[in-house]
Image (cartoon, rainbow, N blue to C red; front, side, top):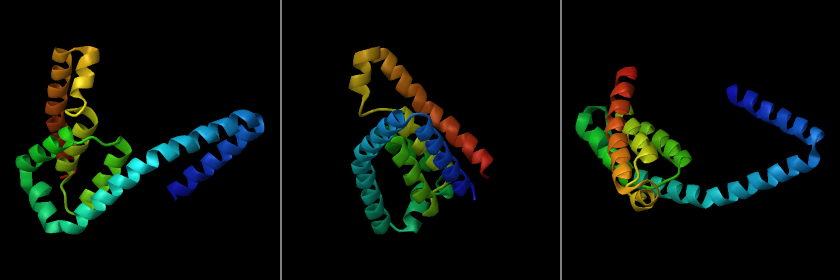
Length: 159
């Protein structure tokens, strides 16, 4: 029901925008289509990789590695993987849903997503170039530690 409401609201606002200024609305739609075309190759690649991984690894294995019973070790493994993986945030949320459906625990997935979005091992050199090596290192370490706080909080909320 919520989806229908949001789609209806978007359609109404698009129509309103179109009647208010046709040229700006057409320009905005062209930019949106271009952005969509740029995002889709990344999205499809990650979806295919996730599909292959989930078809090879069964739900029992996922539950053992990053399930609710994996505890701190699962949270730590998720944090490490999230820190060294580079993917867009919108893909991380889709992947998280697939992991949760396959038996992953909420704290482990929360740690994975928080490190995916906040810690950048792969982008460290670029970040250090702009804000300095010490600041980049401090930011990444604090973000890594904060992922455990996020996992703890999510674990307390979803238990």
